[in-house]
Length: 82
Length: 415
Image 1: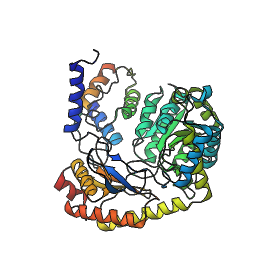
Image 2: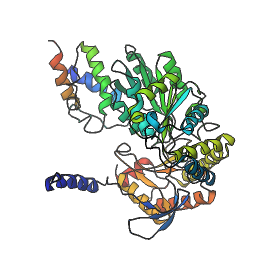
Image 3: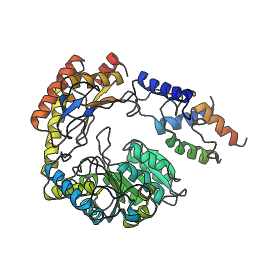
Image 4: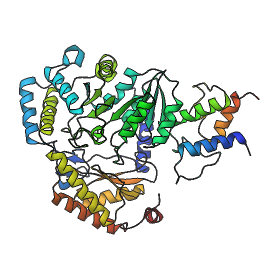
């Protein structure tokens, strides 16, 4: 179980999906699949920045980089100090 | 040549993809003035067909009202055809100022500025008043013109779930570090016909020190006891910081829009809103027509009362016939069909029966939420609604969707 991916997935479900939405997995295209609009990703970015105490520059917070749980997790890992 | 075959083919391929995806929009040519009964040429080149219009924004039936037409004629004679100028050079007549004053009184605000359209009002207002230090928090179903305006401004933008006040409160708490917070909503949502909970929103905005912007384009003139808009319905007149609205729907349906609200906001728009500064003033003939509309509406609530009765009659008829409707009490009455192709075929079958109502599907509404959006007017008489109902029932039977659940319709036609 990848904890970071689960945290992201759970946030996406709570923040963006409706009770009758289809389930998502780590590779479900979120923005290009029409599940989430790119504007709304701002709150996920802010959530991750606060939770991991990081800053994701706007030029890297692209719709492509936020298009699936896997891609978002990859992006976060670039900034989290291990 | 700057338009070689390769470029032409590029666009041809894109247009073909729209056609193949069932997303290509075709216009129907109307040969009569806007009204409940219209004459339509569709498809292009075919003979004229008399149909009942069930999809106009002509909520109060004022688009072709004889008094409005007469006033416009007089305006044409006394103020001319065009001004050939933006407002701040030499495009402001006394009547433009008069309309701004009348709209301020009608909406119960501090001041008003006219725009060539409400699309322009929404395109200009955000950039004029916000910076990168601010945040906009909008309902997820706001109109496309608000989204475009928000995109043009440097403020951060986040959203809240449609009409979910708990979610809005979370977002307001989250952004307390921002210099300014602006909450944005439609008054009446154009695709679903439901209304924003403005009483709750005002309360939250006061609690968390946020401004509130309401696009009341589908409300001004008929929502609320005297038709002032959604803010009247929810008892919060004077408490909405910014109202944007249109003259292109209930208020005569010609063209134009405005930003109305706090004096300083309006003045900032006058100084900075680009669609105001760099676009032509509204033609005098239009202004005079709208002034007459406001005079008619201020004298009596007869038309909005009739609209309310018509809406109740229409909703009741469709519900009893076994259609699935979106809940609401506005003249926007969406008949849910869920499947895009079914919505298109249903619309075509209605047209055969003499009823003009359009199917809406993704991306205009969410995937699996296709529908026929019907819009009721004070121009409709009961016989129009009865005939339309008869046609809906006939077509509903043909497609076997009456008294069926959402699941049953989807099982048969797909999402």
